[in-house]
Each structure stands twice: as C-alpha cells, then as structure tokens.
Amino acid sequence: MTSQELNSIIPKGFKGESLFMEPMKNHTSLKIGGPADIFTVPQDMTSLTDLHRTLKKGRVPAFPIGGGTNMLVNDGGIEGCVISLRSFRRIGVLHRNETNVSLVVEAGTPLQSLVHYATENGYEGIEGLAGIPGTVGGAICGNSGSFGYEMKDVLVSIEIMDGAGKVERINAEGIQFGYRRSAIPPDTFILKTEIKLGIHTKEEVTAKTEQFLSEKRLQQPRWEPSAGCVFKNPSGVAAGKMIDEAGRKKLRIGDAEVSAVHANFFINKGKASASDFLRLMEEVSRKVNEKFGVTLEPEIKIVGRVSVNG
Image 1 (cartoon, rainbow, N blue to C red):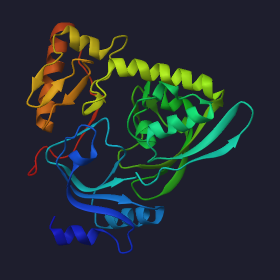
Image 2 (image 1 turned 60 degrees about the horizontal axis):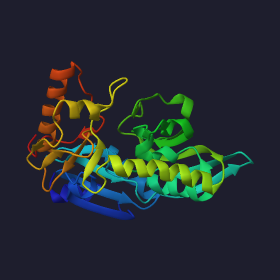
Image 3 (image 1 turned 180 degrees about the horizontal axis):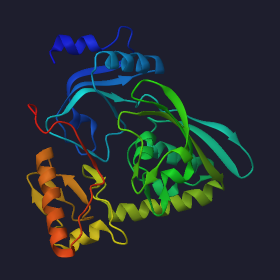
C-alpha cells in the first residue's frame, strides 16, 4: 500500500495514535517483529467503531492486539491495520455483597493492574495470575493461568465487537475454553468483561499473591525480553522439563536463546529475528520429539507475513 492509500484509511475525526509502517518489535514483549502497515491506538469507542467501519468498507484486514505478549510477529510484519486497545483500561465495581464482588474491566487494562486492584481491595480469585504480562483481553483470549488459576474461572461475560462490527454481550458459558486457548475468533475485539471475585482480607490475598510472585521470580527470566512459555505443557508433564532433559537449555540460534532459568522461555539476547526464533522452536521441538516421542504444540501465537514480499 502507498502512503497515500494508508493515510486515506484513517477516518476523519479519528482520536488517537496512528503510525504507518510501524515496527511491531516496538509493541511486543519479545522485541521482535516486522512493520505493520498501520498501527493505531483509538482513544474512545467512537474512534474504534469508525475505524473498524472504514477498514471493513475498504477490505483492509483489522488485527486486534493486547499487550503484545505471548506472540511472535514474523519478520514481514502485519498486513492491514493493527488496533491496540491500550486506551481502554478502566476498572469499576458493578455490584457486591458480603461474599462476592462483580467487576467490569475494559479489555486494554494490563492484567497486573487488575491483579493489583484485586489485591489492594482484598478480592480473591486471580492471585495465581500475578506476574503474567499482557492485557485482560489477551488473557481472556488465551485463557491465561498458572498455579491452578485460569482466567475462565472468574469470567461472567464479555462484550465484543465481531468482524462485522456488531457489538454484543456473550456469557462465559457460551465461550469454548481450553488449555491456554479460547474459541474467540482472531478478528473479534474484546471490549470489556465482567468478572466475579470472592471477598477476603487484603492481608490474606496479598500473602497468596506474593507467594506466587516469589516462585515466579525464582523460576522465570523476568529481566529479559520473552513471550512467556513458548510451548504448551503436554498432558501430565512440563514442557520446560522435557526441553531441559533433551539438552536444549541455553541453545542459541542467532540472538534467540533457550533460557538457562526456565527452558520453556526463549529470550531475545539483542537483535533476534522472527526467523531466529522459529528455527530455535523447530530445533527444540525436533529434539524433544526425538527423545520423548512427543510433539510440542506452540503456546505463543505466530502471526504476520513471513517476509516483506511474502
């Protein structure tokens, strides 16, 4: 697309940020990714719906993004328009009683902001999500979890805008969830969600949250760029343990390396490309299959064009 064509896509009166040929490495936790044709951050619902309508009319692909975690963007970048909902980050109390509270949370809210809010108010149910990066919307799409906690367990409903631009509310029972996945279509925008938490004391919730965080600090390379766990855990066994026992810990291809701290975390040691990362995934998967007869399934989402010309 030419610069003139790209500019014409942004509707008049659009409030927010719009960048053209924007490197996605600037917007992912891995610090990897080629350019998006357009990268936008709508400031309000009107700008979001107007932009979505314009994209649909022009048959330009719309790509929703949360915090840019748990994803690998190919070196060719992303076709069409990436839409970040990071401006949508309010949390409010819908209703509460002596034992439970219902919160309405906008999808662009950082997951850790929600965990902090819950901890400060003594709301129980998401302590195990402490330390998981990304947004609430992304956590719902990927059914984020750890220590036996999962996002689906506290979900009441979500409000979405589908690929046709229709806004609707869906109850949690109507969403198919699995291990680190959901059946929410990739072109669907989660706008906000209702979650239900228990009410305890701030001290109790803080103690549990800090316990989980302490364990993660010891077990994960939190100081280096990564996308979290690269592979899903096969039934009954940790993928990281298998990778370690297959002798792949600290394996490096280009600037992509298997972490010495946690073998299911691959880190960017400087200027890793998506190609480096994919080749590392392939080699690790091959070695695990060779040793254990198990095919590892990616937990991270791999998106975008393989090359600028592809």
